[in-house]
Image 1: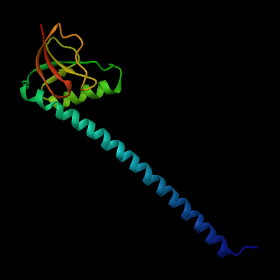
Image 2 (image 1 turned 120 degrees about the vertical axis):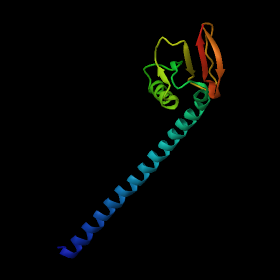
Image 3 (image 1 turned 45 degrees about the vertical axis):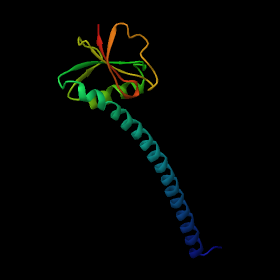
Length: 135
């Protein structure tokens, strides 16, 4: 028969191992999340810095139509649209308006607008972003 002290020591060791395991798992999960967050944050910072060019020449009262080759139902589309609104505030960026002005934000910085026939390119910016005016 085991003494109460032996039972207590074994229970303490098992408890300590469980707590250590949980803390170790928490540490690894936190590191993974932190790395993913900073990776995503760097992408967002890069996108916002690419919009500094248009921000300098667009009037604060200007309304721009958002134009992109991203899928409108995708998370990337929404992220690009809302970050563009954020970066160019107080200018209004709309998905559709009567304004003849358009801001083309490509899916990739190497993509180009397939049909610029109905638009006049006013200015080219970093990462393939174009300021366009409807003809």
